[in-house]
Image (cartoon, rainbow, N blue to C red; front, side, top):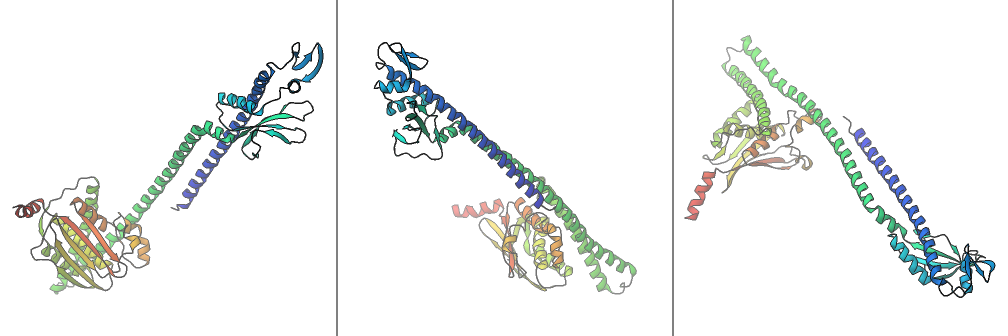
Length: 446
């Protein structure tokens, strides 16, 4: 399946989700900003009224009275604006005191920010007086509606709220954090679901490739067996004892090969279900390897030289059947992934805590980027088509997976060292029998 389309759909979904979230965040911010601006104007008007009350005390002459916001003196209404009347009665506005009143009212509304009070000429826009004459307005400020001090608009009062966005974000902080967290989990959920879908598609593809590889790998030995049976049954080689024996050996080897494949599948299934039971014993290594080499000469036409550097009495504490299979797998791979002339070296070494069995070859080697994948289940089956096009061997892809799983079931491990074009070395590491370790430690303690 082409994985490009699900990835594009996922990316598009996440992008749309991000855009919707951004639009909602911007809308919410502007709404809160407008509410803050409106609230600052309301507070400005209330502060102006409080400042007028402060300046009125002891300023309005006796007999003067307020009529609809205008001053009437001695029964004569001249309707002078109240602010202008206070100025004429020597009660001008104090920007510092007004700023203090305004800050107090803003704090009561939970608005904490710097403010600047300006006295301006409303006609020309000139700043006549300011609590901060060095300040220059820029983006991120709120200016209140001006309040007239003189009816000819030559003097008016305004307030500038600096950095109001900090107050907006403080009000929306938890909302934004919750929104971002929700967006993260929604995005993570979408990505995770797509990952599962892609994984399921990959598993389905692996199963398909495995089935194809299984049929191919089983057809070859079956055809060989069928051909051998036909030749033996025809009676044409009854007089040639050597040829008859060779055909019987080939048939026997192919039967063992099919049986080995089925055993690997069953063993891996048991390991995955934690149902594998190992029948461990001390297995002599040399007879086992000699038998494998003898069968190997029957299965291939390549020129093989084999060296063994291991004491005659060397033994390994393992399950005999599985030990034979895992060493056989490593030798088979050495032959498959080598040229016409194959050199295989098997060596073993016993340390105080473990036994190491190494199988090295002069084959093609494994690229560094592929060394992390060779133990993956069905890896070779998933690449069967590519390798068959290059003339390489095909198969289940279970061999090295089987080796690794069996070694882990023994409490050991398998290591690989390989250089492309120079060959590979696979090392099986078995822990020693507990009784042997104890026996080795007792003389040292005494």
